[in-house]
Image (tube, rainbow, N blue to C red; front, top):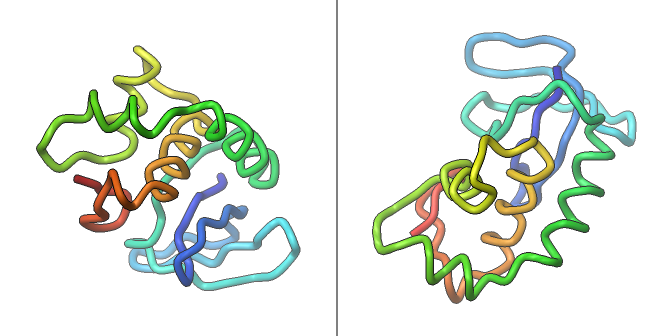
Length: 120
């Protein structure tokens, strides 16, 4: 099992080594082991590998227009996975959901963060 998480304002991905109730022991793609609070985990996935997820998400995020997302998201608070489901018209693959997250995070003028993975 792999996870996408937020640490120090950056999104990182890694492989879960130990999953406790409130925290996880995660090994990042660089080999660094970190303790991650369960509340900071934004996405759990089996495939692709953590490095591939971030590469694919970064590439795909470049093709997503934040203005279009802003027009379709509405006024209410929403989660990035909800918007990804609406944007792709189906349950998004992990890299697609992460791409939406990266694009939302990169456009603070359009999207205000309201919590972990939540925007308005």
